[in-house]
Length: 41
Image (cartoon, rainbow, N blue to C red; front, side, top):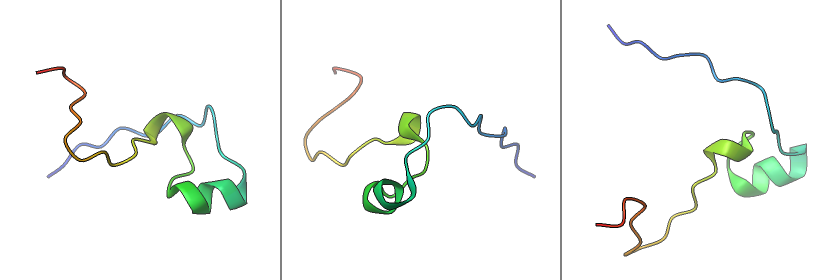
């Protein structure tokens, strides 16, 4: 069994931009960056 909370509909991309970015939600847009680390380790 898995718990997955609902995504709040806050800042959304427009249709064409969402297709280009690969997500509808701006806050979930984490572009792939080889060698980059968000934690700073």
